[in-house]
Image (cartoon, rainbow, N blue to C red):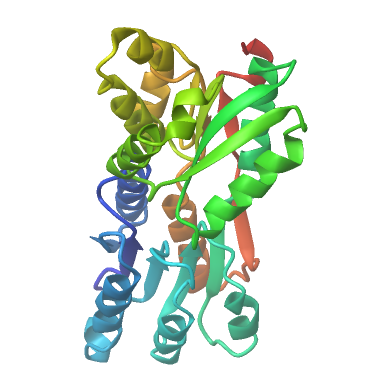
Length: 298
């Protein structure tokens, strides 16, 4: 009997969390004896849409039984989801609040659901980390993910829910990658406002961008300024064991937030739904934790 095929579409292979997502999918595929193909969209929603539609439009015997997709853009690809469901392909959205799921579940004959970390809570945890480091208030340089990404929006809202008025925030924008944050900080450093800025903590919406910020500050020509910026606490999110957690142990990050990969849970749920006919919730959540624990900060 041929193995059940699953297509896993991820955002980029230039991000440690996305690579952990790929490895988690491969582990789950081995566990459940599935044929899983992992592809990357190179941070391009149009490219991702094209890649997935190509898999949907092949002859029925060559199609995947399910598509597990973390959106590269802001929409979550609702039209592509409809095409997949109409072709009898199950659909899972990772780390995105896709409003269309509830509507499509009403008529779909195959599973459709979402799996993610509670991104609001991730932002709240990061806000609590800042409070622990700045109990009397201060200033934060905050590096946010892409504007169209719901995870970036929800982490930002959760952070501001916890942040008191005496913590002031300067926001820069990145694209989840180290290089994008490095460029954003480089550009900010050229502004006159940055010369007058007093920053107590550098907060990033993922670990890769936190390291990109560090790289930009390492480029400063003045040793005093370079040392001043590099001595600040850096906070990240994702907490992948080989990168984020390692950077905390080495002191490059003061803290991170472990967001467990969601692909493995998504695949496990798909197997339950397809093979065991189990009825699934509209959305399932993984649990985020502070590394180190909040009570040990600062």
